Amino acid sequence: MKKLALAAVLLVVVASTVAFAGEHIVGGTKYTGNTLPWWSSYTAIRFQCMWYKSEINESGDVTKIEFQWSSYAGTGPTTFNSVDMLLCHSALTALTSNYTTNYNGKTPVNVFTGNYTIPAGLTQNQWFAQCSPTNFTYNNTDNLLMEISWSGHTTGASGNYFWRAQTGQPGRVYALSKTATTGTLYANQGEIARITIKTIPGVAPTSLGRVKGLFR
Image 1 (cartoon, rainbow, N blue to C red):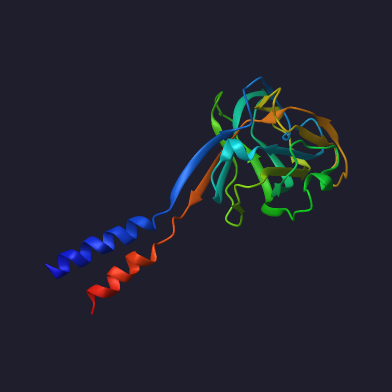
Image 2 (image 1 turned 90 degrees about the horizontal axis):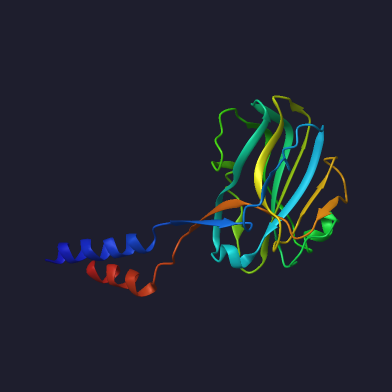
């Protein structure tokens, strides 16, 4: 009986430490497809968007951010070079045209560096991963800012369209240079995204105490 009781308690402890992943669709209501930040008619882009804390409402490790595909102009694949993707907490409620200001005094975390390919064959409304971070934990207090920049590409499609919202969002900013300090602000627009967050519930000290007690 003691072994059975031990097994039962161990199951409780294991269950309490399992990681749970929550998916959160953010960015507002779909309005139209837009090529930012993957506008391959140009040679470089620096882009920022932001999502409200109220749309995420969960703290934990960000494990994936996906944009929702709309359409091609031309035929893929298109590979973008020298890509950097950053995530940053920000207490701002709306983006400005200044990239550093939008960090709101926080330090952005680089979650992807390298070349990035948008393949052929994506279908409308398909979720397509932008990054799968291993080094960013969302605090569920601030809003979440994402920055994507690149310089150079292998042209396949002249445009790669993902869905965006038109109203009620923090805005989107872009410039035709990877190192620009300011850009063009599209106020109130939002980038449609699906954010996956992994949470790990804490283990209650009383549960550990019960396990120890069984070995006495």
